[in-house]
Image 1 (tube, rainbow, N blue to C red):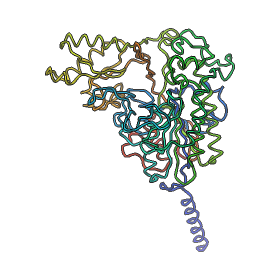
Image 2: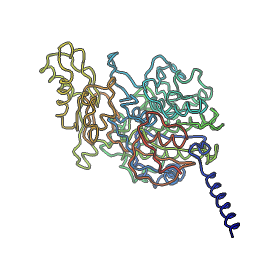
Image 3: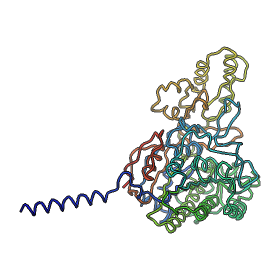
Image 4: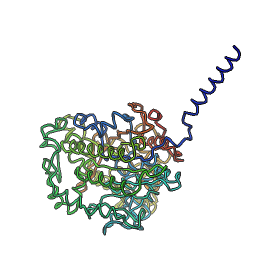
Length: 546
């Protein structure tokens, strides 16, 4: 009996050891994907998926949402919502207060002029004769997850991005990427910067010879399906829909006519054909850049656009928006099928997210639903503020710069007139606070002190950078939108974005827990078996990992 018990004990030990050895070590890198393909969509509301679900094909959004891990409650909680700041936050895992991209443009206090977040004249355009490639990620003050991947692999992982907009391409690629490509609306080509590449690849030159922008701009944009079937959207001739140039709001859209208005290819960027170009470009990139050929994870980011700068001219309820997403659905399906066929389903992981959400147009909310919303005329507000400051402190140019989120005061004048900067900021902020559409306004010195950094004011603190931000910061009430007399802006106050992971090592299911956009980087780092960025502010979404 003792012999039998001893033998049974030995068998039990062997079984336990085998089970333990079969489990993955926390340092086991064999389970990481060979290729990561990210799909980022600009201005995507998560509810587009629910709304258009019955019109989607099986292999695109439906595959991601039924076979992937779907995080339903993810927020991009920062003051400024645009594709530049949003992409920087997503890919660094820190807020603008740390990564430094407080907006697409801001006022350079030292050079005393407006600066763009990727503009860098030390580098030149590669792929065209324009200045659209005079850019770099140098104003991004934090490492991206793609930077960490390159460092961890000692440069052997390949990192690329492709987008319609320069900022999305650069901030998703990071500082150490092998290539970042974007659409140059002046030349109609896919280009890059000498920061990333010195010699333009032959395959990109060949791709540009297809003349996507020119070719597809001479094809009318018509609905993918019969118009009568778009029951999830407003009718095509909805009277409150502004449309292109405030007048062209029905199908078919004659893009060649719109291009004559702008004298460049910007209208092309607003069409499904532009997203088709990006999808085809990414496939060509994978074919020509030896992606997935070794044990080091390669990372490709694909950025689609929801009508680009015309997003607000049509809005989330438009037939044009639904048609845009039916096309994107097809392109995602083609990308998934291509990648899984090439690398094997077990070797490629996908993620889907957005760098911005989208708001409904003011007129639509007012007229159809009687909501208490309106436009905030920035120029009128600044004109009144200027008059008030002149009456109070004397006739001077007290305001150096302003945008839809902040106001920059002339510090030299403040010092010259021996005025208190804190007092001047408080007076300015208090004046702006009196406008009907303003939810809250804060002077910069209080943001620096970190007073009341939670709740309603949290987005202000998350976006403030002393060396780059202005003196007065304000947020509008929900549904209100800023407007300029002559300048068009793509504004949203919505922070809810989609986040889906699909592929090997991912546990399918619905995750309803509350998460932030900064949680994306720690989670992806865990999946890729690489160190978390040292300054990462988010947490791992552990429910998605097997």
